[in-house]
Length: 344
Image (cartoon, rainbow, N blue to C red; front, side):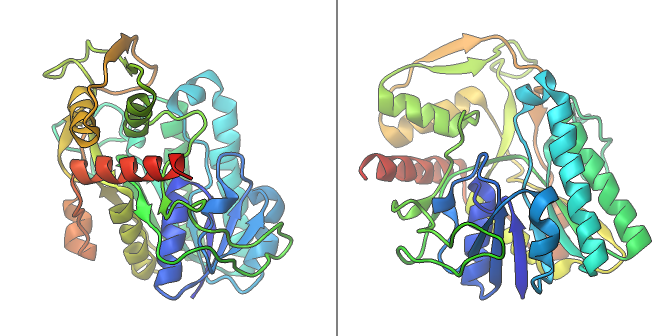
């Protein structure tokens, strides 16, 4: 199958693209590189540099059969400070993509949604049937895309699946070495090494807002790590989240691609089903690195709920997927990725 991966030069999109290539799909990556990295495009994938509004129609017209959609802005704090940016990029960009798909008669899409659509959960675990009450413009913009996908499925016969992630972590080992794909239609390059020469695909956000890479960076640099809030209604006062390994997450996308059904919009949570507090994550990172990372506490971030833990029972039952890698594996793989980059 010829597949378009939007945002495929980013952290999650690049790992999904790599798994799609490994599974024998013909992969095209569309990314404007505003947060992604050309070197993260896997060997064998075609790379097109551009935005959804400017390039989606042209790329889709090149015999694309399905879309996996990751291109979005994803910083909770930034979304609170600049909500218009998130509505324009996340909802506006997606509507442009869906309209182009409708005109070209492409009907299959897997969407990178988020647990942020739920806001503050009512119970210890979040199910797909729980109320959606996002606490940030980021979560609200993603929920709006989910609603749009429901309508496009009902009105235009799309087969859509939204995967609602909790915290994604870890790094993905890349098979093979450097290489390149074909040049993209209207693009500006070809498939890169897939890992910047490190042998891994991992988190390289700028700024980095995710906990595990920030703790590991603090360990490498011999400085404290800053956490946001220690006065939540949790056992140790810090936020609790459900973490999922990026390799497990990518595998769920491949299953979802095969499970899209015409006229249906399906929604699945993705997570381990186990919550860990910020302090617990820091302790696992200390054990993995052997470095006693000190902690500095700052105020809460706007829009952060106290607890988010997934129930993945639905996707396990209906698609046969479940996470297999634990928090220690996530921290260990992320540490291997960061050390490989430092040794280059």
